[in-house]
Length: 164
Image (cartoon, rainbow, N blue to C red; front, top):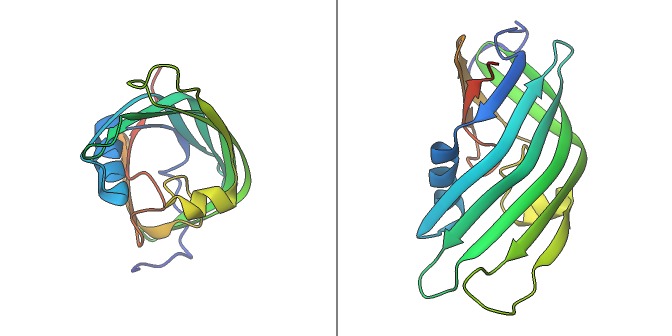
């Protein structure tokens, strides 16, 4: 990482929405899936204090890998974290995770969906992508926040400023 984290930056403060196409590509890179489709709500809210939350509402990832059946993951809930943004460097640490994931196989008739309580341990085991100890560089302007984590498995990278 480069930059001086002592200079706090207020540009990232506010509400951000995930870029679904970017996240789908990042998800494919991290998991090795041949195809990924993403829809639903994933918001990242950053307070001036550094407290932040990652909110999921019917956030859906549908993937396909090789000859395996398609998998659909629907997530709801939030993770709370502390963040520091400054000198183009960011660091975040999860303090609480309350996310439920429902996993189904839409092309397999009569296959029941599985519900999983997402924990920090589950996030770490599954490769991250939900701010589990994410750190790296970032670029921010009035409309876009780009996170460049040192480990691309730890955080969604492309966010747009939420506007009513």
